[in-house]
Amino acid sequence: VTTSDDKFINSINTFHGKFHNRLMENNLSKSMNSPRDLLSPLADDKTSLTKVSINDMQNSEEDFYRLEQEYVDDIKDLVIHRTTNWLKVLLLIIVLSSATAMLSLIQIGLTAPLQPGDVIYPGEQISRCGLLDILPSSLNKCEYALLAYNKDGRSLVLYNEGEIVWKMQTNENNYQVKDLHPKLQFLENKTILIGGNIAILVSHMLGEDANDACDGQVFIKKSHIAPWPFTEEPQKFVDLRLK
Image 1 (spheres, rainbow, N blue to C red):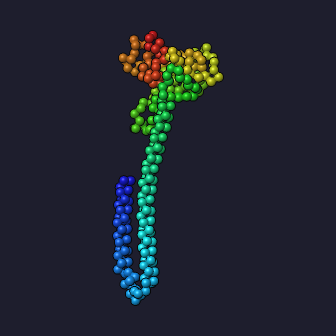
Image 2: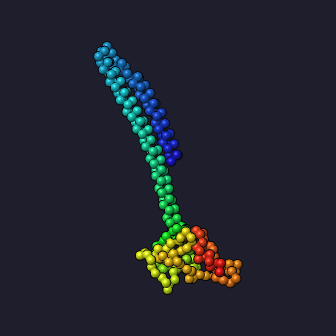
């Protein structure tokens, strides 16, 4: 943009020079071919000389104003050219900023972990990678994981690389829906309620590392609990590790 503007300014300056040169040539031509030289037989006719001189001055003024108007028009074109380029750049910046902000909000909405006080409804899911899931595996280094609150409103399941890591649901024998839409609540005391009932762990996997195992007891890696998909470890997981 800067290079094209510089070229355009140079062309305006060139025209400006030609403008003055043309005026000087025009004035010189008028002086060399003055009415007195061309109309020598009428040299004594003062009326004729006056008329020719007036016409000559009018023509010079018309040439001057015409060239001046062309110069002004070119200046206007330069201003419009520069303004248009800046508006294009400004519009591009606004579009990119808006798109970035929108994608950031979507990513936060898809990946935000549950924190005490949060409520979700049947069918809702939280992805560890969010929008990165649409990238090919060669470009995506994020470890796929998904927290899903099943559509039936009965269980909360964490999937890691397609496998169930742990599952929480209410006691099947005493399950009673207290809400028309069985929402899942993560209470301030770190208790999880499903449909108004306290959720319990019903499925979990052994630690992958021997150091994770606590005297052979069932253990869930903390990286599968907090800081994602929970900001803080729910009480049931704490109780499990303390057994």
